[in-house]
Length: 311
Image (cartoon, rainbow, N blue to C red; front, side, top):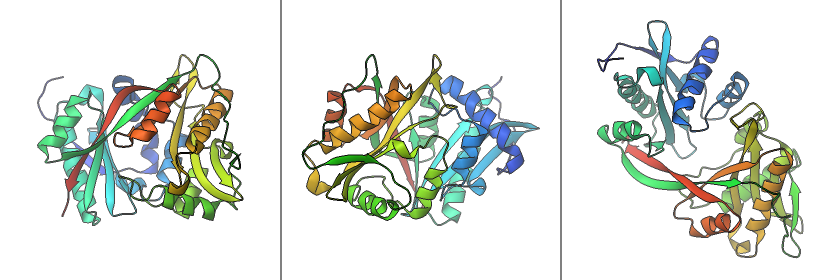
């Protein structure tokens, strides 16, 4: 297609547009290879999460074809996390710029102080779009993967530390307290709420047996979440696994608890057929990166965070 800009109509997502939205996400992921391929079921579950929703997904239509979208995720600290995606066949037509402008306006209208947008550096057009709009890079994370040729070692927690999976609902309040203390001061982390947990429990890629806790005398001191989706992205028919939210309370760090939690999560994913496991780690979290490298994870890329102060 030519580089001439085309007129688009931008409006919020509606339930009847869900299949077209999912088709656009999947078509873009074929080209971008970001692991964002999804299903209508998974998209519906995501829309129920606190801070998200139909009104925070903006669709760009060219005639009767969906050619792009922007979405906004409101955080508990009055910060917004956003993104812009344009159909591969319609890039370079000014659609991304229009969507980003509307996204910034929506975040400002909702009273957010900052708008953060994560970008994979190899997608240079997205990075250039943000820089031209006045965004500044403020942080980056390492993207790492583990390629399984044999099962990971069994976890060997320190003496007195018990590993177990999630027990609903009696764990919810203790989990909220653990998460708040473990991630206090971490860049980009927001407070976990009961509403967040309810939404997480409904996601197709969440299994209570994949949420691991480290416990000492009945007190939760660490956590790790292992997730996979049988309908999600696959490599040669094998599901991809992911590990998120690995954390240990400050007073209990340096004892091997984090290592035991990661191995428990890896073992869970291995038993469910995942031979590739991915995670991200803050570039400034040197100790965590060393742990992952020691367990066989390798760096495959970076995720850059760009920020705009909305004032």
